[in-house]
Length: 201
Ligand SMILES: Cc1cc2nc3c(=O)[nH]c(=O)nc-3n(C[C@H](O)[C@H](O)[C@H](O)COP(=O)(O)O)c2cc1C
Figure 1 (cartoon, rainbow, N blue to C red):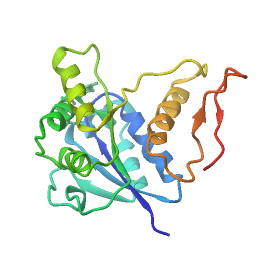
Figure 2: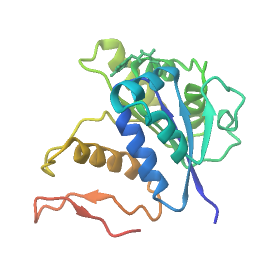
Figure 3: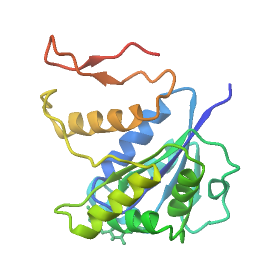
Figure 4: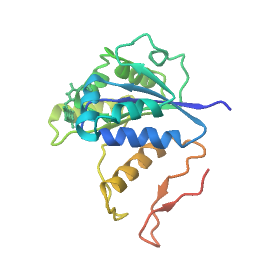
């Protein structure tokens, strides 16, 4: 089976658990292959927010992993075909570097490649409150073709736990790639006022 490659960049914004969930969910889709890049700051947030085994867990789930400094890796080239890239969570530093095209590490270079090749790039930008520079950078990447998806929780599905909030955010992000066989997408159901599992495509 030819697999759909998704590049996952993890940067050092708060929300490290979301990165873990996105990679776990992608691993549940048989047609998907994950290519993971973790920044130095993300290693700190994974440790601080999730725990001492989080980084190891993340690296173990991904199909391929790359060093963030390896700007000669496969994912640094437009010739490496992918179905898209997600940066989860996306720090304001990484957002600014993407917006300015300063491709000085593999996460930013891979994001730059996705923009130039006109492929799907989803940035789960996380900071609050936002200053004008943050907002301008979000505008700039949107104008270049990226999708800015801040991890803002929804409440219409009446989440009972942080886990449910993280699950919902991860499903929303992965849904943006339109992957075949994605089993856990949720759709708003106005009848029940609860989201229901979408029919697998
Ligand atoms: C515990 C922790 C939480 C952080 N949360 C955020 C955040 O929510 N948003 C953000 O932009 N930066 C946050 N930072 C700061 C970034 O980690 C820092 O700017 C870093 O240089 C980002 O590098 P990277 O983009 O290469 O991962 C946080 C740092 C730590 C240690």
